[in-house]
Image 1 (cartoon, rainbow, N blue to C red):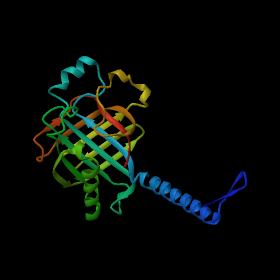
Image 2: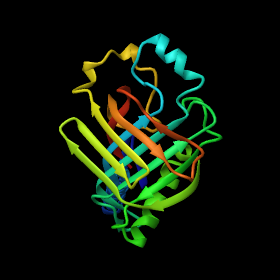
Image 3: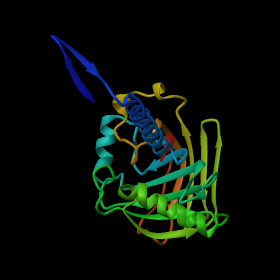
Length: 236
């Protein structure tokens, strides 16, 4: 930029205006590229439906909640039913992975002693199992704690309306029903949050919930109906 002074007036002459335009255009293109890249990296890689069953009621009266808090709530089952997406360039579409989690104290306050077992269906390939394991350990390390075993056994997931059925070989059976909508419950009586962030969370109740395996020092068989379910959507 050259500044030329003439008589009592000040005239500004800008030379190389074409260069300035080029710089402006290049800057605009660069910003557009960065914005587009940011949007691309923020897009979900894997998404689907999430179900969580706890060993304590998540939607219940205050007295019931208090009676369970100290001795209960130490176990949970997390189910990721993947509807679309890939991880490490491996497609995970239509796969379901289940984690059973246990700790020494209520999972709402205990993270250091968490241990878990992962269950994957034998129809998955070696590459898919590796991708699933890496996905869970990368994104849900705090939820799962120490993974003590990864088992390959039949994993069945079925949904009809508001009803969900999850069966893992001979070790786990879960039959649950979510409430029709979030407004169908009273928020002040929902005492827990899901172990991980999910969208559109709705509580529900399990009618059958039992687990027995050798990899964790706990077994359970629920008697009766319990309001111990969270259902929602996840995206990573």
